[in-house]
Amino acid sequence: MLGKSILAVYPHRGRSSEVRYAPPIGLEYVMAAVEDLVEKITVVDMRFEENDDLARFLHGVDTVCVSLNWPLGPTAANGVAPEFNLINRIPPGIFTVVGGRWATVNTDVIFENCPGVDVVVRGDGEETIRELARAKSLDGIEGIAYRVDGKVQRNAPRRFAPLSEAVYPNRALRRYDYRVAARGIDFGFTLDMVLTSRGCPFRCKFCASHVDDFGRRRRWEPRSPESVLAELRKVDAEAVLIADNDFCIDMDRVGAICDLVLKEGIRKIFALEARIDIARRPDVLAKMDRAGFRLIMFGLESACDASLEVLNKGFTVANVRQAFEVLRRYRFILGGFFIVGNIGEDAGDMLRMSRFAKELGLDFIALSYLRVDFGSALEEVIARHPGYHIAADKQHRVWSDRYPLKTLRRIRHAVARDFYFSPHMLRSIGRALLSGDVRLRHVRRFLGSALLLAAAGLLPRHLARRFRRLSGRR
Image (cartoon, rainbow, N blue to C red; front, side, top):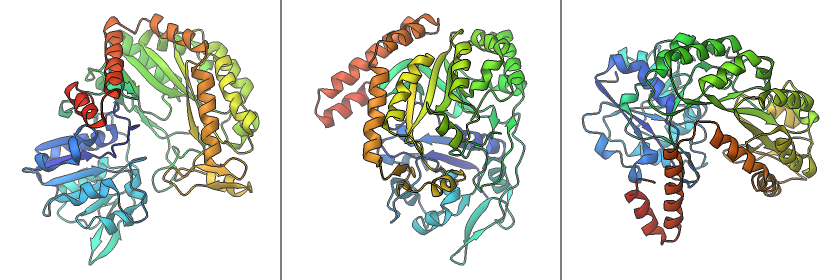
């Protein structure tokens, strides 16, 4: 049904803050699942293409697959969104498939606004895309929706399939150079992503990683250390971001992966997310240090025990302090995620996060708003706390009568300023430079990128855009 040639498209919105460094790894895993059943796959990342122009890629294409995921999914009530415009420019006669988490939840909106869409894949796409490639009819294919006589037909959700040990992206299909970057500044490292597990066994109230796109409980599924190593052998990038919700759920598995990385002599800078529980295994932490697992990010969320209890984090502020006493012994670059606007917190509680982060020895922090993700239990929590509300925006951010979003934004900026514009950062920069991972070429590229950005800022907007294109940046 898919034909011989597939064009896989990752759309964009052209925001100044848009993340461009990370490859569309979810779309690539889905394409890897069907690669043996078609003759040609072309993956196009529209973040790197001009004017959302697909025309030059469409010659000889039988099927176009478009990924609509958080937070790229359209949210306009009238359906006017860049993603829809791109989809609606696909010529008639080309089989059009839309998938991704946003597409799963908003199937009707897609069909209402995109008359050329043939199928919406709902939920995990790997097994579904294989069945679509083999099928002659849409009847009975689990995990899809399509039109029948003008009405949307939803087939049964696909049953969970085991996480494949052998299917991972064909990096030879990439057309783009992905690099570690922020705010337009290139940090000098090439970047790739690897998924070593799926799901999460924990049940934090604000998170939906423990359920699938239909709200069904998803068990944690890991790949074997041997499977992870086989994929890492194919990775050329200097830095690897592990895309798991929590890479360190099974520390024995982590230790085995480290052993294989060290045995093979694979030299990468690994970045990952974990819980503070890893501090209980200094034996594995030592292996992670030696194997290049350098940047570790922790979901700390708050400096208040009451908030941690509401969010069902499973630890206290004292537990966090104890864990970081251990973690600081290694060459890790330590980061913390914090939430601005936790239920019950006042301005003082929120502003205290910066001091808490510095006391822990964090090298960087990332601040977000409390928000309601599809499948999370947070909406029920908010309903039990009068005066708190869910914003009618695409992020479903939480605000209160006392702290509207505008006030939370000011507090967020104040926390960031206090953390980053302090002598504390000199220590963190020194730790990064002395880690042994930063080379002269990285420093040269960083300084060159920063100078180019500064130079472009002095030019009129239309000349700045041309300058960035000529210098190889967007």
